[in-house]
Image (cartoon, rainbow over all chains, first blue to last red; front, side, top):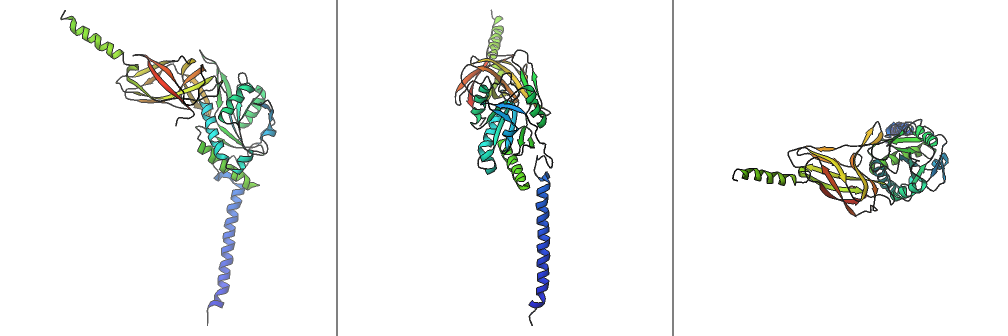
Length: 215
Length: 144
């Protein structure tokens, strides 16, 4: 007499337990991914700050407000065009990252790099246009009044300050981070310098995948 | 007359020594980041190796192609990028100093020509001791 009929209930039970256990593990992993962003390096989660409304102007003299951050991913960097070292170095890194990210569907359609000048005294829209376009024709140069700049800066935790220098024109101290703003207008990550394009690309891919999984 | 001979020889020796530009400083990887047309500022980078047994002090930079050229340093202080003038730059005996993006650089203000990729220009390094050292810099997008 074959043992198969007697083994069937046992095998079925094992299969059920395996499925239940495996499913449970899968569910718990999936649940963790949905609620816990700690696995994603640099992700501000679960409560990424929403940005307030602000009114700046882009290099084509169009309004640049919270609306221009909604519905697309933004990588934002603060600086000024009279900055010979840190700003062009970072913008070149962002240009390289932007080019690589064009193959990412989340970024390719709606991604943008925004250079916010904290030196509106010298950076007029024309100068900003020549400056940012040099790194990429897709980049946006943005500036505005001191109070409006401070509104956005404060929300992102950015500081900037005019510093007089003997024997030369003034310079600006400014936060040198790269700020990732999600399509819902929330600050989801901040990268601290020194920057590399590979790290920027990696950070964007990790956080955009995580945010996509939440919806 | 014979007594004067060693003195004359020493004089020649010192003249030869003084003719050594910046006391044996060798500059390599000299480049400047290409800048947009109309840019008012640029930065030059280099590696400076001191092959001598004395400290070399770099005190200033001269260039006909810029309104001014100054030694500067970018620093990160609590996430803030700051740029400050350096009154001089010391390279210890046998040491190599790296002036690279995000750190020490020559701030070039008011370029008189457009800094297009592949073009070259000269900067003259002035040191505390020795003759000025003229170095050719190449315009590039990045250090590679």
